[in-house]
Length: 348
Image 1 (tube, rainbow, N blue to C red):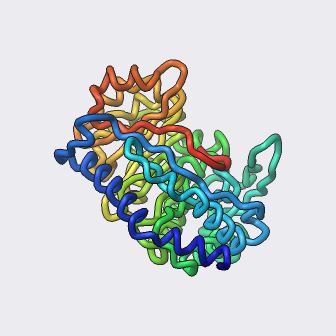
Image 2 (image 1 turned 90 degrees about the horizontal axis):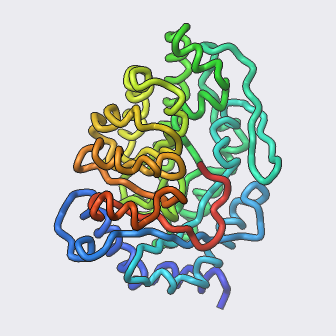
């Protein structure tokens, strides 16, 4: 039997799909604070499996998809775990955290094992909405997603490129010039931030139009897995602005991006972000907060400061172990992230 035909049969196995959907139900129960015997007995944890390819996605997106699916099919039965959610995923990681920078015209380059960008070199306030269809990175991304859909496999999750957030991208495009402009030239800053956010929303809308809801996952599908219908933003750079600036200038944009998805979604945080907890608490469509590295140390502040219906995705670190996290939270509103099997790319 042809390898891809065999792989497609495995990746449409009704039992594997049923098992994945059982975990989606457990996750949704956690998000909805509904009784769930499993969630009472142990803390829900996620550690997915990533499909790999010998072909870089940049060279041949269609072949990349095919090989990733074949690779996933080889180990598909390992997803049948009972003590953790092990989703099967492919990650369309294009230019790491600089995918959107490329769409706005930045030069992207690879050095020392990761992607970087050079600033635009333009004045804040002069940003124009890009013609995404003329962008090579977007063409690669579209081809990968369309190839995935054509394969007609219902089991694997499809992780999007890093679409990030308006503030993250603005800092990538301008460096500290955007931070100064937010204080000294707020209308110029607002102009560019809105153009960035409108572009991000457009990209999410496109993905939602072609990918099945049960398979679409924003960045890092293998361990930030949410139930179907939830989005994600990257809040790494919120540590660079005050709580007041975030509330007035950035939070409305983040809320608009999450509103693209029917159930809202998640924000990723990895630095010193405790000062924006009150703002996060007041965002109705913010349903989950993902914390790792420096932010994970502040788990208790987030657990006590957020709403009772906001879930925390927790990545352990040297200063905050899984046992520490369970002691602080009692296992309530908590999802433990564990390292994935397979490649993950350069992600935020």
